[in-house]
Amino acid sequence: MLTMTTRCVAAIGLLALVVLASGPGVPAGAEEPAGRGVIPKTLSLERAIAIAIQYNPQVEVSRQGTKAAAGQVTQAISRLLPRVDVSARRVTPVDLPPFSFQSTDSTWETEFSLSQPLYTGGAIPKGVEAAEGYRAGSEGAYRRTRQEIAFAVRQGYYGVLTAEQGVKVAHEALSSAKEHLRVARLRYEAGVAPQFDVLAAEARVARVEQGAISAVAGRDIAWAGLSTVLGVPIPEDTQLTTPRPVTIEEADPEALRLEALANRPDLLATKSGTAAALAVLEVTRAARKPTITAGLSYTLREQTTIEGELFGAPGQEIVVSQNSGYLVLAANYSLFNGGQVEGEIRTAEAQHKQAEKGAESLEQRIELEVKSAYLLVEAAKAQVEAAQKEVAQAQEAHRIATLRYHEGVGTSVEILDAEANLEGAKTRLNEAIFGLNLAVAELDLAVGRDWPELMPGEGGTEAAREQ
Image (tube, rainbow, N blue to C red; front, side, top):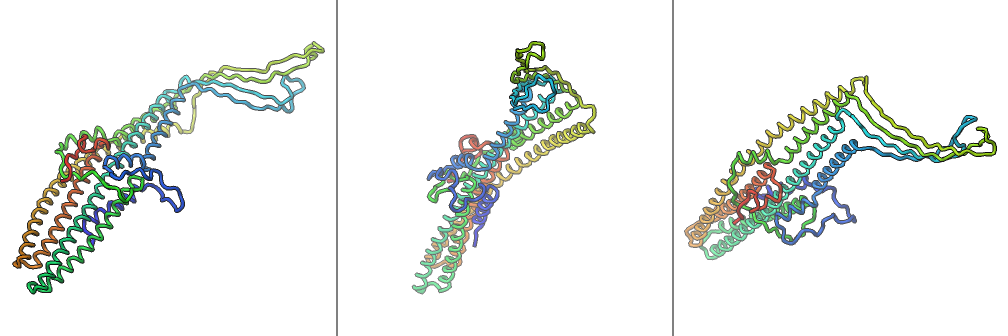
């Protein structure tokens, strides 16, 4: 039967497989996934996070989003600068009038043009401002993605450690059950214990063996989940070297709240989006104003030769240049557009208001997340302390029950109950430690701490190693 620890770790592994999948599987015969072989034999938590940041596809998707936003900024700025174009075309005249300076042969024409917006009602500068806001928002989303991946790695990493500890607890329980079965058989053969003791001990061994099998399966699932989060395969002989912390530093809820409001990248991104929405609103309002553009165009054409007799110079040829150019100062103003501009303005106003309220809502949600995470950490700390006491008491009770049974003054039921209680206490302690680690990771995520700052001794909330 699956223990609670095993079920917990299995759920974590399955969640990682579903939510943080690295993309489509590799079909048979296809190339191995990128990053194979990058996992060292001894894998620390910090190294695991660094590998996930590099190879998890979600991080790359978010990073490409920042590049796309940077490209939009470049496009917006380009509208402020002069535009120079050149075009070439092959021209073949047809149906020319009887007299024309244009050659009847096919010729090349090359046109150079220069244009510069002089006045756009502020649309171009505001467009740049909007693009900058969207870029800041994409950078915030990228940073938040890195934090979420770091959280997922911590969850998966500690999930594996918890599953490994669950296997250890199961094997210890199995060894203890087998030892009790050995003693029960000896006492039965010596005629000092009933056959019931042997049968009960055999049943206990069978139950513990089932739990050990389930624990091993849960451990394999946890490893698979961690591999998925990292985005690369994990060799079978890899050892995790960062122990699970069991104590943490005290924290001030108000300081955590202020830190979250100042550092949460998704909140900063939302506020940048609000500023961008305001800039977009100004861009739409600028459509009510005229635009003024200056331009210069010059076209190069092949020279043409005209018979001189057309101009009273028989026997001579006149070479005529066909190059031409012009300067333009153009003003444009929309007198009627069917309400399009007004509709765009109303839409932009609503989107700006929506962004403002979205930022307010996110602030409230962040405050709730931080408070909830803090309370979960406090509860997890208390649960670890209680579980540690329970294990100490269960170990002492098991020691006493074993001595009583060996001396013939205790019963098989006493020792079987003591073994079951000790196994349960160790399992609950294992779960409590995992719950504490997960709660701390959730608190760091809620506050918005970046992954290099989360390592023990480097500014994170984790302060002590597992004993």
